[in-house]
Length: 241
Ligand code: SF4
Ligand code: SF4
Image (tube, rainbow, N blue to C red; front, side, top):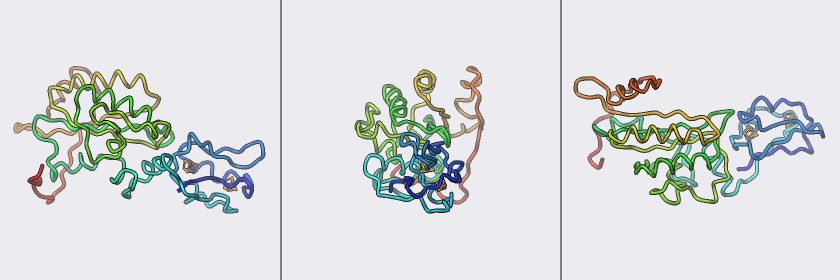
């Protein structure tokens, strides 16, 4: 679906402006609302919530590749563009069932962009390519992985590189000994991109209750916030993992 304001019927009341999480709506010299097509992440919040008094906000069909914006802004349904729901992280949160991350491995999720900030997929590609050079294993059930034309290099499809999305989450896993290299690569690439990002790590605790990696983070004086997650009663890891 494509979101736009029909300027002919708009009366310039400004009601829709604060609803836009991307600051994409402004009133033009013609005193009507306009959408900045670059900033708009196709979330439909303006259409669904602003309650335009003259129904000037309408939906039209969105074509590829712009439809990718809607995929990353609508996290609860499976999309034909990526074949997976949401933006990622489900795999990390369900490790007690899937067993994807084993002792000695670290699962990563790099939360890129936020409401009001957004992320250009060109910037997401800088991150995935920097990680791919270190031989990380990208999570296949992640919409960003689906958009890669080459998972070995982390290169995204050329036709989506001009798209901007609400947020996206490169997900991958590494061996514990790769951690310093990966962390340094993330610190370096963070200076080359124009958005915010926050790395999330998933590790299994050691038998003595200590948590791998924390000593390294402490040594480097890197701020972290430990979280535990227990999905009670969800069972053992499936045999295929
Ligand atoms: S709410 Fe409707 S009429 Fe008011 S500025 Fe937005 S589009 Fe125009
Ligand atoms: S679809 Fe979302 S980002 Fe685009 S103008 Fe409407 S509220 Fe803003």
